[in-house]
Image (tube, rainbow, N blue to C red; front, side, top):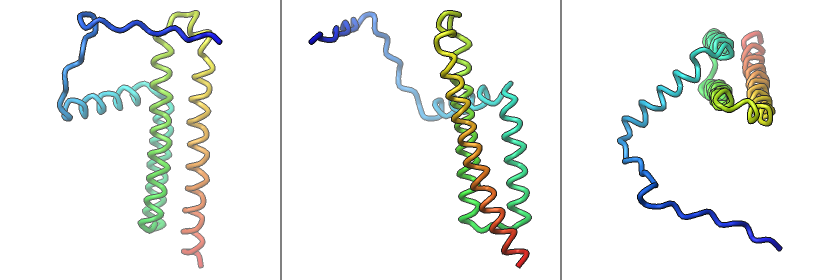
Length: 138
């Protein structure tokens, strides 16, 4: 049986510790990341359009609080998946050509995750909206 090689211990002089940062700066970093994630991503415009459409229909159909919670949960799920996909795309663009050739499948998997989240959200949305529409039509 082969033993795994141990990693060398980092030298205290070489290892740079990041100073503690206040939550306000962490929050600003997160907002900047959100901005980077949505800027230049055409997929986000589609998701935002669908979000506005879902919210408008939910208002018209006078959805109940639990239905609103389901719809907002699905919206958040899709936008979060899209942010992770954007993060992977950004990382992928920064790789050298040889590494990009070996890792392109990760981009397809991330896109598949966004598709899965979108399909799930659409099914939940159709169930909620269909239920409300059936109730309103009698």
